[in-house]
Each structure stands twice: as C-alpha cells, then as structure tokens.
View 1 (cartoon, rainbow, N blue to C red):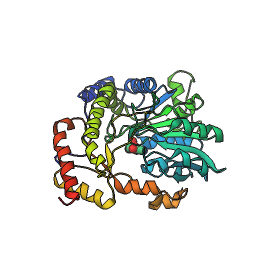
View 2: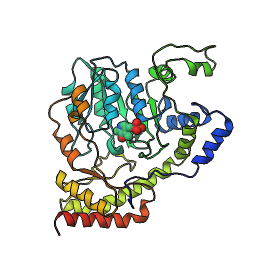
View 3: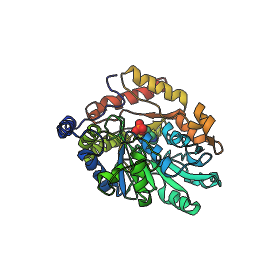
View 4: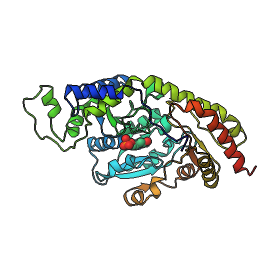
Amino acid sequence: MKIPFNKPYLTGKELEYISEAHALRHLSGDGVFSKRCHRWLEEQSGCQKALLTHSCTTALEMAALLIDTQPGDEVIMPAFTFVSTANAFVLRGGIPVFVDIREDTLNIDETKIEEAITDKTRAIVVVHYAGVACEMDIIMAIANRYNLMVVEDNAQGIMATYKGRPLGSFGQFSALSFHETKNLNSGEGGALLINDPRFAERAEIIREKGTNRSRFFRGEVDKYTWVDIGSSYLPSELTAAFLWAQFEHAEEITHRRLALWHTYHTALEDLEAEEILRRPIISEEAGINGHIYYVLLPSIEERTRFIDYLKSRDIGAVFHYLPLQDSPAGRLYGRAHGALPVTCSTSDRLVRLPMWIGLEEVMDTVIGEIYNAVSHLRGR
Ligand SMILES: *Cc1c(COP(=O)(O)O)cnc(C)c1O
C-alpha cells in the first residue's frame, strides 16, 4: 500500500532513551522512565495516580478487578467498541449489557443508560470514540444517582477534552492505549489512570502480582508479601523509555494530527452537502485530538465499493468495529438492551481514512482519490 491507513510516528528520540535505560541497567518496570511517564500522565490528566501497563486491554482488566466485578454483575457499555472493553469484565464473570450509540458522536447514548440499569448493575464503561468526548456530566450524574462505578475506555482519547477537562479524568478509572495505531505509541502499551484515591494502593498491588512490592521499594514496609490477587501488569523500562520520547512530543503530535483532521473536514464539506457522505459531528463540549477521521456512507454496499476503489489506488481505508452483541462471544457472554439500530448501521457504513503524521505530503492525492471514488460510486 503506497498510502497506508496507519504509520506509527517516531519522534527520533526513542532509541536514545532506550540506550539510556540500557546503560542504567534497570530494565524491569518502574524505573526512571516509567516514573517520568507516570508523572507526565498525572500532570496531563490531573489524576490521582497513573500506572503504565502492557496495554489498554490489561488496564481495563485491572479496572475490572478494582471495581470487584463479581460473577453475574452487569456492566453497561456500547457495543460499538473494541472487544477488550467487554472482555476485561467477562474475565471476572461480569455480563456486558450493550446499549446503543448516538447517531452524531457514535458514543454511548446516555439517554439509554438509565433504562438498562438493574439491581445487578455494577458499572458503566464509556468509550470516547475517535477521541470525541461522551456526555460525561450526564453519565456521571446517572452513576452517582445509582451508586455505579464509571470506567472510561480512553484508548483513543489522549489529549482530548470534555468542557476543557481531559478525557480520562471523570470516572473512578480510565484506560489509555499506546498501541502503534494510537496517537502516542510504544508498539504495545497502555496505562491505568486512577482518579479516586481510595483505589490507588490496591491498584499498585494488583499490578505487582498481588504483592505490596511498590510500598517495599518506597521503604514503607520492610519486606513485601502476597496480600491480594493480581497479575504482572507493568511494562519494562525499554517500553517506558520509548514511550517517554512520544510523551515529550505529545503537543506537537496532537497538533499535526488535528491539522490533517481539519484538512479532511474542509475538503469533504461539499460531499456532505451533496448527501454523499456524512462527516464527523463534534459537539461544542468536545476538544478533539485528531485520532480518527471517518466518514459514513449511505450503505454497506457503497462503503465496500468505496474502500475497494481506494485500495485499487493503493490507499488504505478501513472499516471499524463489528457490533459486539452480534459476535459469537458477545452472544455467549453479554446481552443487548433492546435493538441497537445505530450501532448496526454505523458498523456497516463507517470508513476510516488514512491518518498519520507525514500524510500532509500526499494529502492532495488522498482527497483527489476520495472524489474519484465518489464519482465511481455514482457510476460516472
Ligand atoms: C485500541 C483500543 C483498545 C485496546 O488497546 P490495546 O492497547 O491494544 O489493548 C481498547 N479499546 C479501544 C476503544 C481501543 O480503541
């Protein structure tokens, strides 16, 4: 593919920091680079504690442990999301209860949450799709009224905001991803942010195999021991060193992605006016981070032909989530609250356009080919 869908960005400092970590001879987790990353995340988000993990998936698994998900507990979430949002809770015996998404933002429809609550409901998991904020004021008010936990799957939302406040700072917990497809990356990587201080100590323990090893290293206890269930959720210093290079350029990376996002948005305005496609809708409350630029086509057939046309021109454009409630594991372990027409329709019609730093140089080609693809769809 000459113009791929994604190209992970390298700042140029990654190998230098890895060799620094190597020279320090502290290669396991929580050395100087991990600590720098933790501090940066805490300052960026205002969270009580940030902990690097191997992935967003494992950060969500930690959240499922921290909220004490018990077999049969229900967790309300959208079905238009990555499998890990649901799977993390299913591993603890939880039952994902899928509600529909909004037509405009493609985020969980906050007006459908309350009717899905039962006496088994334990938590609401929100996903800020494409780094566009969910309606957090309303969602937090519902959670408080019913005494539910809120976990933000903020895999896509680093540096994005809701009413000026960073995404990931609203729920008791939030999970970030640093997978190579995300805005800031370390190949594989993630972080759990803890906003509610009551959970900070247990989060450290769960991440360190159920031991109080973190307290031991701080000199708070004179030996460490097995105190709770847990696993090994901390990445090595090599990963943290790589990630630190990305954090240092977070502003610039976000800025450059946003410029690409706005280029698409302006260039495709006419096609929206002609009702050939729909562009993303961003509410006034949402400050975005240029994670994804998507368009919605009228039908799955047109979407498929659109993707195939771009592929024939060596341009990578891709669809996104298959509705979780219709997947084999989703049917087995979860349930849908009512019909999910917006989820199904969005899944059929959405296509993500190439988005990576460096795309600037070929942006004219990409936009030209999008117009050609549209002419092709209309048989002209
Ligand atoms: C990417 C992504 C994940 C998974 O992230 P990993 O770091 O690969 O585990 C989870 N949820 C959402 C919404 C994502 O976009």
